[in-house]
Image (cartoon, helix red, strand yellow):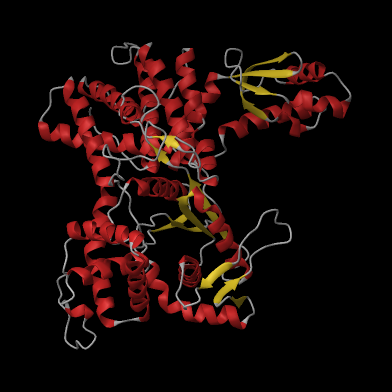
Length: 588
């Protein structure tokens, strides 16, 4: 199904052609003066130079050819050469009815769907998730869902940090606390315990303690680095401890991500590609891509056109240890061999832009990817508190993700029960649903690359550009439809009719922009475009609602048309919040 704006542009292009001008001048855009018109075309001004003619004369010629159009209700030429357009109500209603009966509201599916891998978790095992993990999870999940909705095959991979220094730090601290554990006895030949010598709560305390010690004690840090090397070289006891860490950490990670409705298809980590590293390194050396510099193995990635210094990509340190570059490049090797993706998207803090520039260049230079494979880094800004600094607890520490979720759940529960009577369990369940919308919409409504202020009071408000406001609008529509059903009215077989008011037409025009918005959000990996669309749509619906008595309307045909309009609005809003990663309750 063609996009709404494309159909309008086609009609205008026909008018330009009929008037003797280049049809490509007939591109139509949304009006920047909605008080004057709904859409506009500025092609007459672009054609003035081409035809050596006053733009207003061209505009008048074109406007004359628009008479009798089944798309345009009116086209007026205005100085210095604008074409101000209003659409026929029948055309808009017909388009929406077509949307309502088409799969995915008529969104065109790609002829050759790409296979996309989205790398968007990046959580380190042995650590609790904190607010710093929030943006990657929320943005990545939405990017994945939007691309899937648009018809692409998408694989989400958490890509855990499970092989680096943090594991060495945990092992070192465990050894310091209890050196008698069999994992540290190199002569031990028996079976190691099946139960981990720590709980998830203890692990959550062990890592930060070890991390602080390593910053203050150089000898301690050296022991942690040595432990990391031993793990990577396959020392039996250290590998057994690593398995314990994984067995305790991964279920906790899954629980925390599940609370955010974030799901991964692959639970892979750096450890999964360790066996590929030796072969990749030998290949890079054999083909002349990698060379030794001060004992380290590096690949030059600078280009002649660079205006800033791009350092070499270090593949192995001087002691032979691997780095993030090593495991990330080996992960590309694995992904190309196992999945043959057309595109790989990485979600991380935007401060890692240089790292990904180096890594992508290295992957291309060493031919780890085919030329057609797109590598994309989406760098996101920082989530800050009201003070403009990275979000912290009241005590000044980094806030755990579970605590943040609890605080917002509690605030939503307070607001929901303040003026409403309902069972405690129902209120709690609704609060969780609405709180998730507050968290996700609050993040996703900002362009990913920008820092933003996480304001709990604002994000949990039922008014303004917030998740709860969007959900309240959906619940309002559900309530209206439920009342009509309770009164014996039918919700089946209704068709949208020509708009009878400006507010009704405004709502219809917002709905008509769905396909264009979704296509753009997918192409640009931009969830904030979905948020902007549903906020405008919710506002348009509420304007229509406040001036229209839908339930008590006695004209059956008019009421039937409104029912169809409400159903389409509800369905599109629910589709949009689904790709953003949250849902609406039945009541609030």
